Amino acid sequence: MSDSRAKRSAQNAATGFVYHFSGMLLSFIRRTVFIHTLGNEYLGLNGIFSDVLNLLSMADLGFSTAMAYSFYKPLAEKDEEKIASLIAFYKRIYNVIALVVLCLGLCCVPFLRLIINTERDIPYLEVYYLFSLANTVMSYLFVYKTTLLTADQKDYKVVRIRNITQWIRSIVRIIVLLVYQNYIIYLAIGTVSVLFNNLVASRTAEKEYPYIKHIKGKISSDIDIRKKIVENMKSVFIYKASGTLFTATDNVIISKVISTATVGLYSNYLMLSSKLLLIEQIIFTSMTASIGNVIAKENSKKRYEVFQALQSASFIFCGIITGLFCVMANDVIYVWLGEKYQLSELVVIAITGNAYLSCVLLPLWIYRDATGLYLRTKYLMLLGAIENIVLSIILGHVIGLAGVIFASAIARLTSYCWYEPKLLFEEYFDRSPKYYFLGIIKHISLIAAVIFVLKTAWRFYPVTGVLSLLVKGISTGIICCVIFFVAYIRTEGAKTIINKVNQVVGKVRASRQR
Image 1 (cartoon, rainbow, N blue to C red):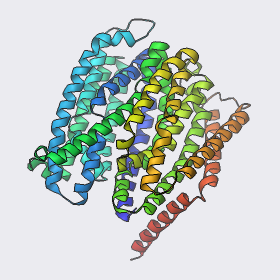
Image 2 (cartoon, one colour):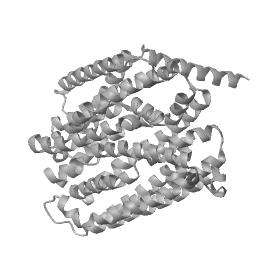
Image 3 (tube, one colour):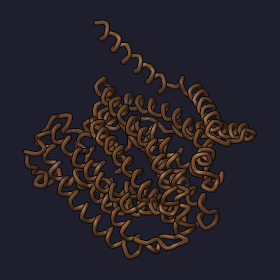
Image 4 (spheres, rainbow, N blue to C red):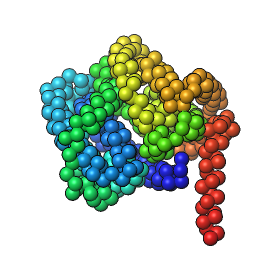
């Protein structure tokens, strides 16, 4: 990557770290207060509402990705009129999306109690849901402006606003839970914060690109451009909708097949794994726009070189993250919430498997979005999503919660996980994906061996409190870091990263000496 691309990626990553690490701390505090004031069933409700609304939000799926993709070229060419035209076009699209989601969401109200499986009746269930629906609908306001910042590698400006909003929202919510223990006020605070965040982020985009307010878009009159955008959106929609079906159906199935309270227990583990995965996701997603630039301007050798660097970094991060989670998850839950909130080792292994796929495939997914690869794999992804739902129901009845989670991993492995690398390597890197797959197999074997050895070794060290948890956690983290750094630091991808870092450090030192 060029110095300017590297600089913007670094800014995005640094801001992302601040946002997500502060969010991690706030999430633990807020969730602890939530569980002790409202209980596990209300936590399960949060998870179910989130899944239902994610499914409804499939009306939007594909537009944000397609928007960022369509902005790359006019931003590079500084074509202000084209950018403003696209903004005007997407504004009309998102107004329609918000209306569609609202209508579909209201249609779901009569069926809510069919998927909620609790030991006692929950009053005001429909009111809680409507507040959650309002959050989702308002999240579409002005997003067409903020996506422009993301496409221009200035996502850090949006993230700063989110960080401030996140702190205010979390602190106010914690106070409300402690003083009033009222779920409606809790949800209302979320609705107000979403509106505030969107308004401020929209104003930021307008200041950065003032011409988007004054040039009236005529993109709809250009039939060829409009057709291309709409066709791209259709393809992304099918792909992203399929991806949502992979993740946004689990809680609904768990609630119906097992119980809503189990959704709450599962969500605690899911939060732990997702927060750990954010460490890698922040770094990699901050590079998406830069990768789009590499795809557009560089040859296949350079594209592959950058991909190798990302994959080597991913192997290191993924080994540390999934190893740490699998070994420590139940101990963290025990010390944090208590023994009754723990899940079986089989469930932890299932969650680890899904977390691993989300982690190790991240470089591939970044290239997929940057290259528009979803145009070719959308129907295979859809078949995988259908397979996931069928397997989740069957395995959920057979082995319970672990079955629902295992189903997602099985469906992914038998669908797009093998086909997307094949397309990417053959069409963008001009080479076979054989060594990529061999690398994944070796990495899985190493992680499995590390987890087995660590779990066996720690069996004789019971975690009873915060101190013993810290000793075990720090020791496990250090061991995983050493093993995976030693295993991958000499790969070609790692050498590319080291060389780039040395170049940047050298330029910084040279500039200071002037």
